[in-house]
Structures are given as structure tokens and as C-alpha cells.
Image (cartoon, rainbow, N blue to C red; front, side, top):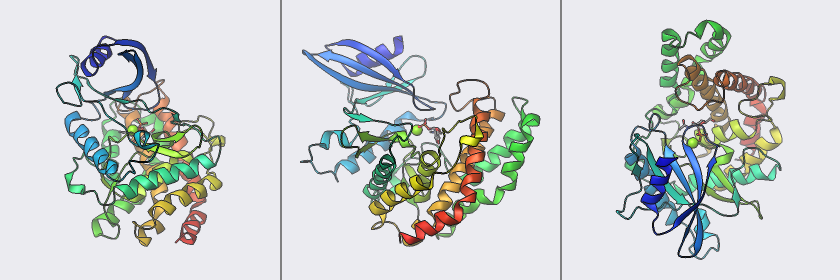
Length: 364
Ligand code: GN1
Ligand code: MG
């Protein structure tokens, strides 16, 4: 608790901390809601300790985030009553920086808590997923003219499924946690899908798909929805904004949101693809991006859902083999449960693939 207090006192001064509450969503960083009172006024903030095992260079990361936010800010309507809530507003320390380093090697940042919105983990009303599609689609459109070469690669080869496949094979070979023998079926599942791992990467390399600036982590809970109107207000978690493919953003959102069960559901019979949700998200995303993206890109969207799901099978299994060093886990079998749930989901996506392709084609 000490280091968060130090972080708060670094960014805010002259007042009093009223409450600190951990927000447990997110598999990487540690996040807290902080209520602070100064000059007779209560304000809420989000403080986040960046996971420096995952993000090796927090300075470069914040540099990216601030550039992206500034770019989007330039596109927002300043007269919109929601203007303040449409972007994360990061706090600068009195010295002007966006980061505080604690003495345990942690890096902290803070932004103004966005009021009246929710980061949903589950869909309670199908309309929510249409809005998520619009929100992430708008984000893609806002960054359409952002100079990709100005961004640092915060995690090198993040969605390079070809190189991740190599990392996975190396993890099987090293077998650091002595678990390879027990997950033979899961390993075979991936080896059978080796070709899928290079599908998007090859098209980016050959120029068949254009490189875009993308969010790269478009889980449902990374778009804040207004509690009253239900509208998408603000896209959050900009740590992995990097050059990539629009298929990644579209695909990862479908992977998480069109699943009828949780990402780590143990009861595999609950895991299906909800085609109504698939269509709603697609509609929202395509409505926002049809003027900026190429038809040939949109046409391939369902491939994004397939490859991103396969990527997560591979990443969860790799982490299990490495002894759970990357993702936060709730128990020792958590990464294996995630692996199996994503395998089942991938089979469901494969079974619905033709219908997905025809639906997307009908939107062109
Ligand atoms: C991580 O922490 P969170 O939930 O935003 C991960 C994503 C995965 C996701 C799976 C930087 O995201 O890539 O898709 O878990 N983020 C990073 O739940 O690796
Ligand atoms: Mg994230």
C-alpha cells in the first residue's frame, strides 16, 4: 500500500486520500480507483502500476499513449457535452512527467476517473456489442492518419503469430514447469493449425493487407459504455497501440465478446459463438470504418477472429508451459483452463466461418 500512497502524493498534493479500491479487471497491470479531496472538492482518479515484466519501457509506452490521445483529441468536437469523458485525461506530476517510479521498480501513472460509464466484462443486452463495435471502429478511424512510424513497439512482435508460434515451440522444448507431457493434446491442437499462424502476417508482408495503427487489445471491457444512453464513450487501455492490422482489432473483439461464456470458462459446453452478437459488432465496426478501410481488408475480418483466438490458445498455453510468468492467474490451472476454453471457442469459430464470411461480404 505504501507505494500507491507515494504515487498518489507524487501526482496530487495539498489534499487528502479518502479511498483506495483495487479494480481487479485486467490480466497485466494493477489498477486502483482513488478518491482524493482537495480545496473542499472530491475527485476520483485511476492509478495504475504498469507491469514492467510485460512492458519493458514505460517511458516509451507513455510517450505512445500521450501522442495517440493528443491525435484523437484533435478530432473531437470541443462543444460536445461529453467532450471531457471521450478520452483518458492523464495527470502530470508537478515536474511535468506522466510517470512515477517507486523504489521497487514499479512505474505508476494516473488519469481522471471517467464518471457515469462502465467497462463491462459481459454482455447483458446485445445492443452493447453493437456500441462496442462502433467505439472500436471509431477509434480505428480516428487513428487512420496517425503516422505509424512515430510509435514505439511497446511489446515487440505482439501479434506476430508466426514468431509467437516459434516461442511456443521453444516453450514446449524447454518445458520449464515440467508440464509438457500433461498437455500433449493441446500442443497437437496448435501444431495442426501451424499454417493459420502465418495467414495475416504473410498478407501484411506481401502488402495484400495494409499496415494500420491499431489498438491490439479490443476486449469488451476496453471500451467504456455510458450508463444512461448505452453509447460507447471512450476506448481505454492504449498500452498496445502499435502498427498492426485492422483484422486484429476486429478479431480480438469478436473472440471475447461473441463468446457465449467467459474467456476462462471451465464448462466447455457453455462456449459457443453467438452469431447475433457477431453480426451486431460487425455492423457497428464496419459502419465506422467503411470509409477508411479497404474492401479487401474488411472482407478478411473473420480471419482476424480465427487467428486472434488461435493466438490466445498459444499464449495461454505458452505461459502455462513457462510456469505462469506473464498473465495474472487465480490458481495454478488458470492458464490451462483459459487454453482449453479458447480451443473450444476456436472450433466454434471454425464451424461458423463460412457464415461469418458471407455476412461480412454482405456488408460491403
Ligand atoms: C491481457 O490485461 P488485459 O486484460 O487488458 C493481454 C491481452 C490478452 C488479454 C486476454 C498486454 O489484456 O493481449 O488478449 O489479457 N494484454 C497484454 O484476456 O498482453
Ligand atoms: Mg490490456
